[in-house]
Amino acid sequence: GVDNKLALDLYQTANELNVTSIVEVHTPDEAEKALNFDKAIIGINNRNLKDLKTDIKTTLQLYKILSSHSCPIVSESGFKSEKDVKEIIDKTGIMNFLIGESLLENIEGMSLLKKIVRINQ
Image (cartoon, rainbow, N blue to C red; front, top):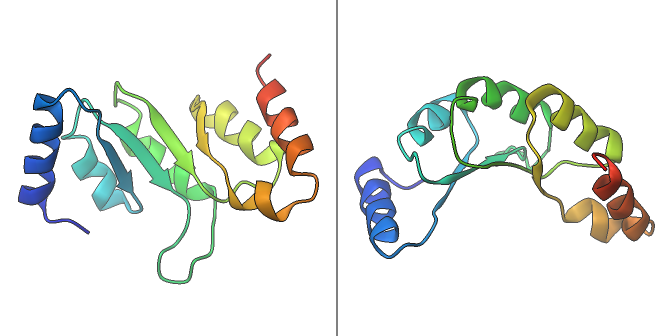
């Protein structure tokens, strides 16, 4: 990851340029640090970067730390079904998702996308 000073410098420069930053977190420690970036979008990456496995429970765990963040939070990776998306919405209120692999690998990808979009309609 990026060291704290460099991250803060990049964040401040982005704010000065009126550019929104995205801060990605994978661990509770990173989530705590991300709260310092109060104008940033926070992405919770559900992919374990050591073994590349995904688990949406990462979002559930880290959201407990990030729930006070006032800007959008994105749950990233690991969504295999509309049930997964609905679980995150129901348990956290997060409405922003980064979904790619399951749409590309699944022949029913477009159908899955339509189901996900309809969840809160």
